Length: 215
Image (cartoon, rainbow, N blue to C red):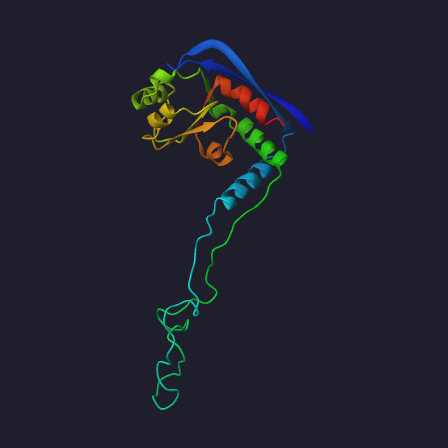
């Protein structure tokens, strides 16, 4: 059963004080049950699986350099017989059944992924802070730190800033803060939202989220 979940947030200024205005975010969601988190887990595991590079590689006995000459004659030496120094039994030899480069790819339906993202936003409602639009002239690292402090955000906690459009000045002002990430509202990352302890969302981004992920 599809329900309309309406989330109401007060709009805060960059000083941390409320502006007096409120804004709503309407998201489609299924009825909350004990299995509501399953779709979030499935989307998260799919994203983690697709992020694997799959570049692990080992050399087989045919790929290891050497092995053209029999180390010693078959009989009469008292040692175990050996035909090549590239044998997996030898130090520096090939690897039996070792990893090879592999493409990791898993698929999740678009509507299922959108449902998982909406369910996650609803679950993290208490971590969302809606702020007024950021002035491009104030894009400095010191100003970003002051803004985080005004919202009582610990700099050691993961913080995700959701904006309608990423500007170069904003990236430069936040790249020296390891715990803050900037993301576009129409290209949300479920893993980053799940791991973030604080979500700073500009008021213009809420409309983009509502239009993009309610399909």
